[in-house]
Image (cartoon, rainbow, N blue to C red):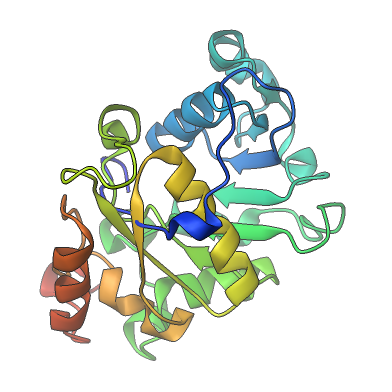
Length: 244
């Protein structure tokens, strides 16, 4: 989400902390260099990860971000090459236009994070979502041909820079994380922990309607307890503002 918000919590057991500037970080690909993608690029490079970033307009348009962060601008086709985690953070309507075979050269067990939301005013009418009740991330997963983990979709982009807190801090935000691939989910939750947020396991991808736009946790800046409560209180009925 453009000014997305959300919280994230992860058990310390899965946390993998990397000293800033250390070159032993994970290889992470980011597809989409808007507010969320740009700020994740800033944070993940600062944590010592090897970040490649791509957008629909080409690497030459990412020179300033690359200069600022040390990330490597690449074409979309190359963004996942060798990556252990790939973040797809583009408008939902653009997902079907991504090249096929996007993850063929990714690392084994690559975790794919979907940060997207369905905004009918921007994305047009998507019948599977509106009529059939398919969750937004399940729809995205089908187009990508690879399992996805839904995270950051309700997080304010600026909070990624401004609101990290150490584990145990009473003001640490928690982010809901949904997905079917438990190993990939653990990897994503560990990364969010490293970024300075707690996470709450929001269930499988078919449960991810609980964190879609218009739900209690969408945009919620709160800790584990409140995020857990918000997920439980969500209604499967899509709010009128988010129906085409």
